[in-house]
Image 1: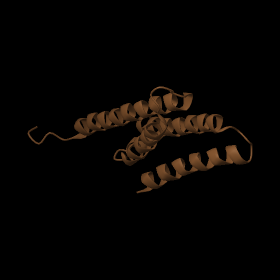
Image 2: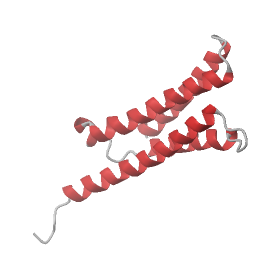
Image 3: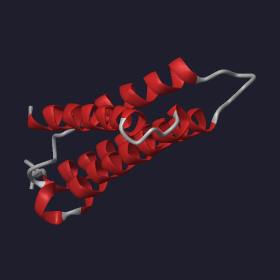
Image 4: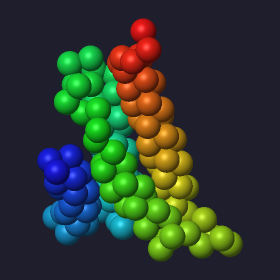
Length: 126
């Protein structure tokens, strides 16, 4: 449950930070959106690399797949609501690449989990 709460909190932070950039620092929607998308990508990468490549966190984070659902829905929503086929913008391309990276990372996390789970199982015949 903590992983879902933290991923929702991370996405909410990114969206609130984008609004802060627009209102307080007077950045354009495109520039603040780019910064927010890059920040979301850093957070998503932290979820993947932190839980899957850090040996100390592998046991604690072995069953955490919910953040990938949150990130996939977030980037999918950005792409679906902003993609204009005849006029593709910078942020739409970034969001599409992040959606692809999130799907690949989710598959990679599931594959690493499967490999670790099969390696740790005790063979009942032996």
